[in-house]
Amino acid sequence: MANREALRDLQTRLADRLQAAKKEALSVSSWLAVESGGQHYLLPLGHSGEIFPWSAIQTVPYTQKWFLGVANLRGGLVGVVDLAVLLGGSSTHTEKALANTSLLAFNAALEVNAALLVDRLAGLRGIDAFVSSEPPSPDAPSFFGMVYLDAGGTRWQELNLQLLAQHPTFLSISA
Image (cartoon, rainbow, N blue to C red; front, side):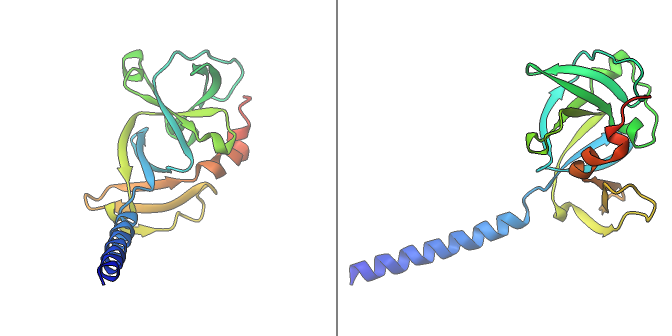
């Protein structure tokens, strides 16, 4: 009789834990929110790699203006891309402003030896942080995902880093 009650109690606790895990899974963050060039972007956590503080960049001649050069990040040379300029914006970073930026490496699983320069990390976001969404405009690049609107009225553009890494523009750094 005691074994039966213990088994029933164990099953009840397991069922409660499963329900709690399901609820937690709904509120798990799926994006890293960043700001670059005055715009707000959502980068899938599965595509995002390590975050580094601004590091000295070795410029590379005859490249696109959005390709800043290469940086030594943890002993590996990584191409550094100014996200704002790549997406059509402008960037006039002073040395002082660069000190407050971050380099976001692509996830190693994407096999891309690059990092994005972002102006500010804005934390993690899940779907519950937004009140509405809409598809990207028809003329948007293929790596643009949904546009999400938060309660404050800020528009967040989702970027698929895997598609970005395969986009012809991203792959053509020569000027």
